[in-house]
Image 1 (cartoon, rainbow, N blue to C red):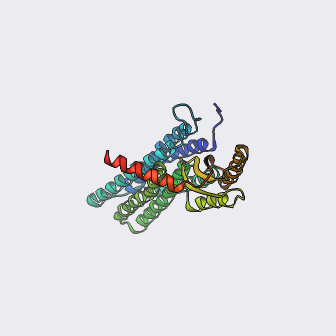
Image 2: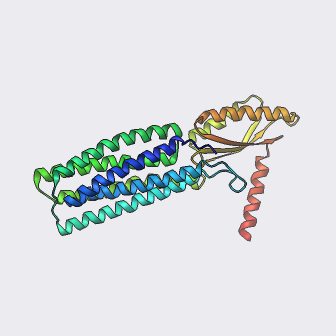
Length: 309
């Protein structure tokens, strides 16, 4: 097995390392100052670190080669990781909301505003450059886990900005409830951001088709081949790393097998170029005539039989 770390693995190591630094800064300053917004941000960074470490192992597993047991590979582990990450983010958002409400009720005082402001400025600086790096890796690899990590840290960027603004307003006005108000807003925003991560992961697990534009382009590639009579039953899905495509290809009934194989290879090569950063598993079924109606009837009969059972 290739021991060289992939860009996705390096990205998770870097993001977890940055999160660890931010945790140390925010926990120390948050506990000393009593700022619920800073502590909320610290909790979020702890979860960031845990999630990034989890993502490393998820990516490591997803990159394992297919075997006799997992013949299509383990790419969907990344989708599972995305759902877990989104759930953890949601839980952290709920806890932050709880802390904010508690501060509203208890009206505790926020102190050490200057160190807190410095801590959040450092956090903003580090998080900004981390987000740019993760977005670059996500664009290069199309990894759903890195996309989720990038989105997560983007929400951190906004929440850190909100915390900084809250601390500045408290320093100017002396109103401690501003801290709780911003903490409440950060919690709600974190939950909102987690929704997209969870939905994308679940859709991959449910074998959602590829984007409509890609499916349309695949259909156009097949139909424009001069030796293809027609096609049907085009189906697509992805596991995050690999795109899976299957279709029935109608060719001339008297065509030699070697010619049919050449046509299928030409179509596959063009389809793979649609997203050359992804792996592809393309399975054409060669038909001597259009049997779509027969297949549909057989599928309908099978469905009725299963319903009766």
